[in-house]
Image (tube, rainbow, N blue to C red):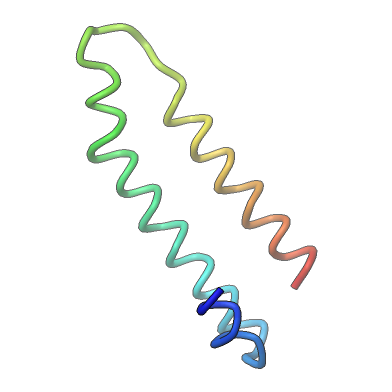
Length: 66
């Protein structure tokens, strides 16, 4: 909510940069901590791929609404 209020009157470029930074942080978190933790048993997991797909859909919808 705070981010919406702060970025409400900013240009589209600034808003897209902030979405890209947030996505980058989330993807980094997944690749460095969550995926290795999920694969401890040696079983293949698609959690990382689904997470990245979800972030991509979120960014796409942000572009449509913005």
